[in-house]
Image 1 (cartoon, rainbow, N blue to C red):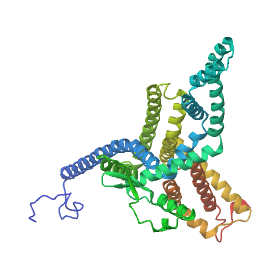
Image 2: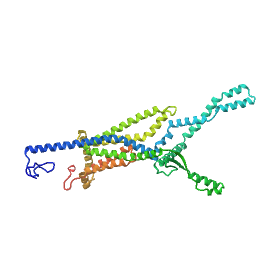
Image 3: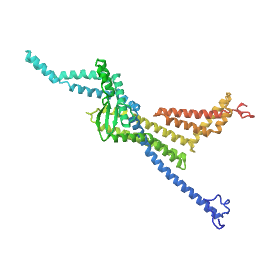
Image 4: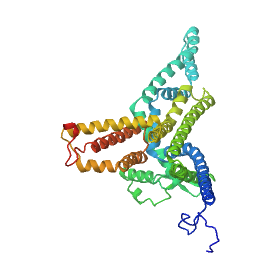
Length: 448
């Protein structure tokens, strides 16, 4: 480089190391350019972090809903857990009993019964007054039939047998439908091209066996006929299978994408701690919005169901039962978001945060000195904990976060339990770090 070529601070090291001593004006310009570069860099990071924050706030509620729909539709056990309480819900039981009672009573021609009775009485010479009175028995007889039928159906619907049959029936039906749509099931319901077929091989085998047992020995020679029956044919089957595949992808990867975008936003922001607080509070706010949206959807649903089709209390019970796991997930994520924001604040320079940390340090120090006076010394292990306090704290918090991630459908109670364990471990670690005892060769002032 020629001696007259000006040095470039962005390419070279400090001006003194580049072989050229800057003047005061040049040094001031160098500092100004470096400051502008830093400001531009921070501005780009803020813009990127803001975009990622917006994406996180959009993806968070979508991820929660996608996971809930996926688990409810694709997971047989989760689906059964969702619908099982409906068999014990009084409002649903009453609606079902009334509906079945009306259908059974409608099949009984009470008018024909009373007409036959009147004809028999008239043919046998009964007085006209008796014959006329028999015609008026239609109303009381219908009421009696309805009472008896209602009582019988109510006993069945409110029994344990009905609840067991309800769970078993829903499990078989859901498993068959999911197996058909995904192609992974081994049930009798299968998809072949654009047709839905029912495998009746088991039925044929049972019929063949019973014929042989009944003495029809030749039944064992029945040839292997076609063992499937086409239930229906539709050009929408392929679309339904594609929708199931899309739901499986969304339910699996949408939460991962939302978490990755949130982490990238926190990493890109100039102030990681502040961005973590903002992201956590933003996700918490979106969960509140989602809870409000569920209330609105519930109201719209109840208004759209005619009372003649389903009583309002039964409709409300059905809606609340179906979305209760979604509500639990939203509340759990809300609590996790608030806890994360609070933890991020407590690690900051705020006056309240410093006061809390000071009280915690003094409390654990007093407890540690108490252990030392009681003869419990942690020695080198306590010193190791003191030196590596940031690492042990990070590992403890990370373990708690990993437990929540790996926990299948954590609840608010589960979050509280994990939080309690994390705080307990942090306290125990701090106390052990403070219980190292007197340093070698030096007396502990507390013993003097």
